[in-house]
Image 1 (cartoon, rainbow over the protein chains, first blue to last red):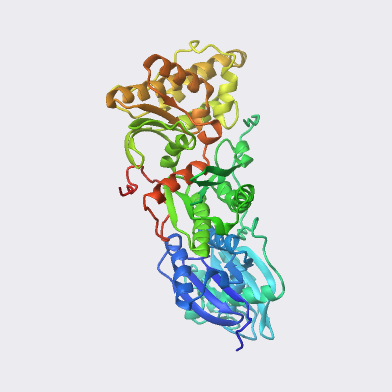
Image 2: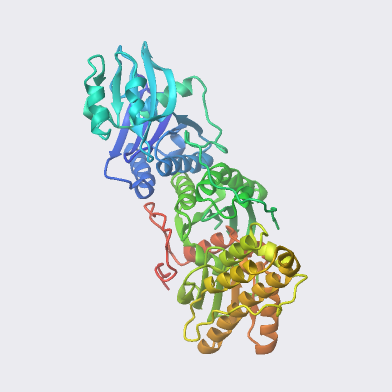
Length: 239
Length: 338
């Protein structure tokens, strides 16, 4: 593949307990480093990026675009990845792309003729889920990402779906219910985890379509409203 | 060397630039979202930092007429504070440091407050005692020299600013409690109600929960009409009790350690009643008292950039693996090498 003149993408995936960084020239992956050793993102992410660029002999200003796994996922993980990307792009003037985490996850099992349903477990024990379909060699959204109670997974899964993502951590009864469906297939275990290479690929598609995020105001896709209790019957006091 | 300072340990989003020429620019974005909740909601604080930190950094760079290539280092608060807030500032700082290949230096937030009195001359002479009083912290620190600290005492329950917030809530005065109580107290008699002073004679530790409970019981025992009538007196008496404790402990430490200055920093140092008491103390005892300008009392990145500048000059660098430390102690930070 021709890489001269290709867009250099630095991709970051920290939405789950996997910490992964990659550099791609267009659709060609140049390097990827992935750690699955728990929530170490706060310590490892910056050093991983630094090392990867050094391995490639690339200066930070040779990166054209930052593609960040933008959620849904672990709030803390998403913040670490996005905050790092924002600081990097602020300094270097790169464009920022927020890649839907579930779409990158759906890409990993490869081009299949089935609807692909990636799921990630939220900390509250719910599922983040969506459905994607391949059109040619590009992945399209069929059902938008959402928060789903675990017991509704069976209803949500379209006929003939390929299920990927946090399958192993589903409650046993939900898992056996899904596995008993003859039309549903599970992605191979080694392809069910998030990876920055997949984030780079989706980032490439979004970049080609000009779908950039605003660096100043970009936020992770939390998908969950956060509600706190307000004070009642008091006036505001601002000095 | 121009140091970019970043501070996001609680609910203020702040950036500043400090160099040999002094403070070049600084900005603080105050998160008003917490007011209607009566206190800082950590999740909202973290979300707001994500939306406002980049524009805040852009602003100070533009304000100083600089570009990112002019920066020499990045200093950032890595603790103590709210972890969800710390990670935003810390990771933006790391992104900048990696992209610009700049040294990174992590700053202890409490040490940052100590440096708030070193932004403009005259600086306090050392050794000195520094009282750090804010919504999240109340510590009495012996500053032998910059970079060399001994925490003499800290609060055993509520921070002083937290006591103001909680009492303001009891009295129905809203949030933040410091300015609300100060405003209500202006028309009150300080000796109207005799609230307890948690002095703990043999310790430099503080305790404000007994005082808070005393206000609560006093308030509960009043009829609604009396509550309204006595509001100013109760606020003034409470404020005086806090000020008395802070001043008494600080003075005792100054005398025991024979220091050359007393510094009072942190959001509560904006309180005018406390500032007046400190002026009186300086006049009576001859101990020089230093209180930063109000804008440098509350959380700000100017003090972080200043502390970073100091450490960088002494060769201190942080590793890119620097992790947020929500419960960081002042004693546990590295000392600069001589």
